[in-house]
Length: 562
Image 1 (cartoon, rainbow, N blue to C red):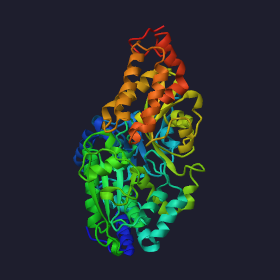
Image 2: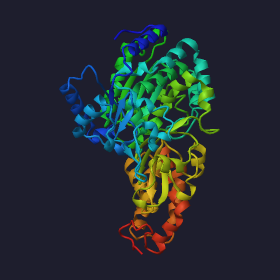
Image 3: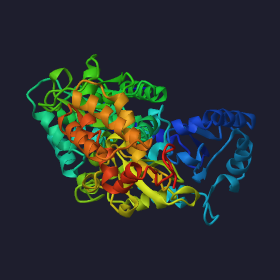
Image 4: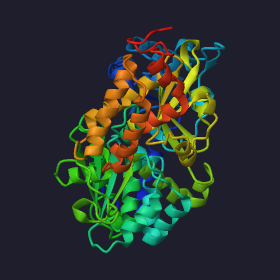
């Protein structure tokens, strides 16, 4: 690799990559996201390499090992370019036929393409498949087009052009202004204005400032950040560097879970390649701007994803939350101004700088702009990662992309925000995907994990499940959280086991008020949310468990099923 010292050199390098690529040359893109790896895509990759070698096609066919394609339900996934033929559930046994029939003879193998379960109709191309057709894949759409371990692939699709524009055509204040005008809100849970957070850190009186990618994603049922960061690490890194320039930071951190070796490897490769090209480190692109990044691993506890706990962890201390009398954007890591945004938030930055705030703010709703990645799981036909414009109705996500509820069951509720989120009943399924609209309903969007529940789900047990998770994940530092959650869990467990008593609901409400109002950090303050939302919309189920000693969903084993 040769170091790039100017935007002109970067452009020449990009054109050089493109000139060497034959757009008509067959390329087989294989999903090596975590889901597909679990379904055997590593064996599939080996079989493809062996078959291509066997047929002496090494010079005529490319293999591209990519990140997550999104449609996890149908893995392992393969896309064959330039025709963009999509194959699902591919096995090593299918490889000889794929090479001889599709790659060589240009014939489609019907059994491997998408088949509509209702009509039986076949769909060959991504644009024809309902799961993809109804999305707007601005962030994750390039996952099928790049190998995350090859920076050349990212550069070839225009990667780092936004960074060059920011460093050479815009002042730091102008970059900050574009982010504010775009009204980019943090995708990590709170939906706080990214521009306002950056501005606070920029204006804070300190020479040292830090920027951090929160890639912890410990929320059960959330996997969109992992899919994005593993599949396109440079998109996130480019956003981080631009943010550092705007804030005036020269040191960044990427905080990820210790149990994601593929993510760690892809990120460290991306950092090394970016530094070799002069896109990271000293004198980036010859601009005089210096910026370095370190990968930091968590110790495996949920609370370490909380902002102040995460920053303590980076300092080498126990990841315990601290009182936020002062914002972390003023006093964060080592008491220096620190900007923390999640993976998806940083990934939005390059496209805002490239295409402008006016373009970005034209997508979404009045107060929630852009697209949103959603992890779709639970009682749903099509699990996976979807990306839709803000304002898309939950109904569209469940039925148009998710394919509806399997086995002819009825939709009962959708749950957002994991253990600190809330549930929305089927009667409100036309609610738009919007930070404020969901918060008003008691189900804050969180990072974007969407759990779909059918008629056989007991909503009391849902609240118990999430409280059980949080009881084990609380750091135990403050009494309202530590003891409040455990007492709520004990009462909910008794209710699901047929031991509920009159007055339990009132007691739960009182405990929720104390934990929600007096806990030190967001974990304790938000822990009552699953209970409060299920009580709000499914109070009759609580009363049936307590007074009638029965579970309406026929789910709780200790309850009468009548």
